Length: 115
Image 1 (cartoon, rainbow, N blue to C red):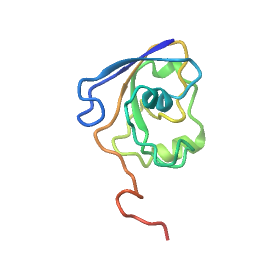
Image 2 (tube, helix red, strand yellow):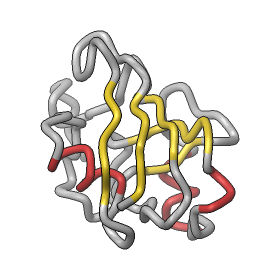
Image 3 (cartoon, rainbow, N blue to C red):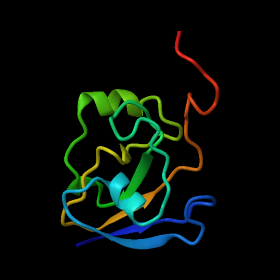
């Protein structure tokens, strides 16, 4: 099992958390399995940015993001060089420290529609 430290988030995880995840699962799945209800509007199909996280420690242990993820991340609120979509970041053997950004852009929830 790999340790994931989740930094405090006012709504989702006010005290922060230390969770264990099986290598090979996505960070998003690991959070959800541990009752940290990160948004995932596209049901983890790499079609939105609601599961955006910032990997404060262990970033280089993750497989590189692909072009689709990079294009989506360009639209994420609070983008940093350590940003990933948690549905695409797969846990390995290296412990991770992640921050869930304060805001997320969810066009469906916010009443925006595609035309």
